[in-house]
Length: 63
Image (cartoon, rainbow, N blue to C red; front, side, top):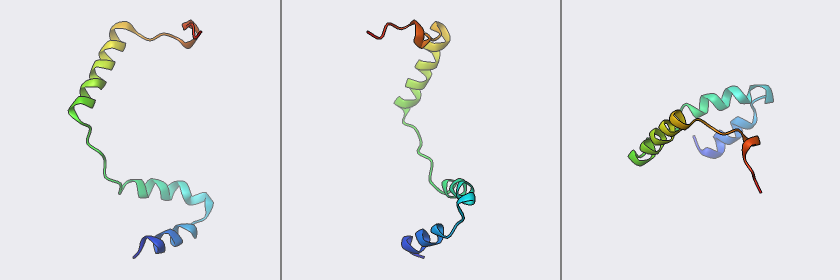
């Protein structure tokens, strides 16, 4: 089956079922494994947020 044929089949799907079809198709997309540096950045950010909390947008002087 070609991509064009698959595209044509998708166009036949009723609009109300598009979300379900999307969820099924996404299951076949390979997950990207994060790089070690990305994982470390996430850990650092979580640790910083745990120690320092967050600041509400209203408390920031945007000017």
